[in-house]
Amino acid sequence: ELNTPILSAIGHEEDSSIADFVSDIVAITPTAAAHLLAGDFKKLVTNLQHAHIQLNQHITSTIKNQQQSLDLQLQTLKTVHPKQQITLQKQQLSNQKTRMNSILTNKLKTNKQSFSLLKQKLYNNTPDIEFAKTIIKQQINKLNHLSNLRFTESKNQHLLAMTKLNDQNPLKILSQGYSYTTNLDDNRSTVTSNKQVKKGSRIETILKSGRIYAKITEHFDE
Image 1 (cartoon, rainbow, N blue to C red):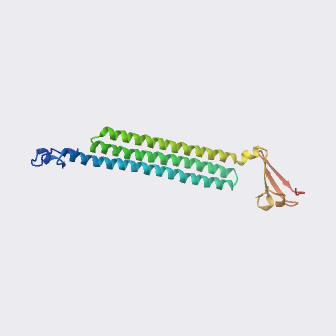
Image 2: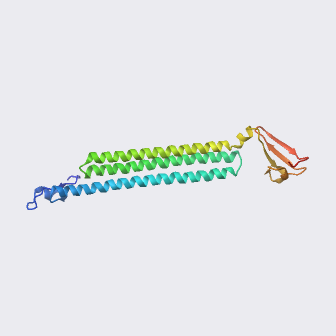
Image 3: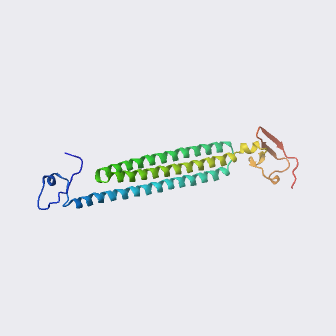
């Protein structure tokens, strides 16, 4: 027994040949046989195009969702302080980058396997094998190009986010001569105005190197 489908198309309706009895499908003419094969080929090409569209939509949606999540985390980071929070955010960004790379890699691998199966079906069901190979090769090249483009874009966005994150690092700001002052008598609230302290208030000032504890003796309005 053969696993390869057999199509008989002798073209003599009045006669029954041995090939008609042992074949899987009998066509009344060679032209009818060609129509049977061409129909499957068109369907496979349509499925291939549909799979390409779905993959493109999934990759775009994944990158968009990850970008929105990244923007939200960056916004949250702006409202909190210090070093431990920044370290945590860096780790989360790194984990997201790893997960995104894993998702893209797995999705690409899965779709390449799907294309391989479609390619095998085309080999088994169409006489125009070279044409089918050309179509599949073009689709795979487009898929690889799109995946590389999306990955590069995502990588650049992560690098930009890390640069912004580094620019907002309190330690970097402190190294430029700035300081961070809190009111020890008000649950260490951040002092941004002289109206937040009064005479006798105890304050703590954090510098790039070390801390200064002081007591307010006077304050002046500008």
